[in-house]
Amino acid sequence: QVQLVESGGGLVQAGGSLRLSCAASGRTFSSYVTGWFRQAPGKEREFVAAMTWSGGPRYYADSVKGRFTISRDSAKNSVYLQMNSLKPEDTAVYYCAAGRTIVAVSTPSEYNYWGQGTQVTVSS
Image (cartoon, rainbow, N blue to C red):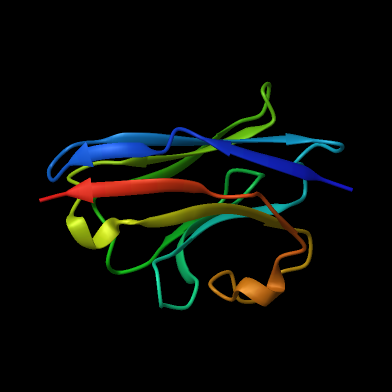
């Protein structure tokens, strides 16, 4: 079993930056795919970014490419989402997710474990 806890959300002005953290306990992330998703009020949960724990390719939604960066720290068993040049449309609850056998990294149902979410609000 893997428990995920996100932190780092908050209120920021447009153009600002935030760094989200996701700490895992229960098991290490090794051999997992870790991802970030977000859900705005009245909208479906959408893919933001993902990476394999082995340090392979990183995947990003088109809407965040060039602005967001996913990374991980093996020693801390944590994954991060650096968000720069934030826009009001980035406002959402951000969720960390992990799964072992994932074919489509952008599909929420592929992930087995989810954090509780952290709110990100970008003011204009």
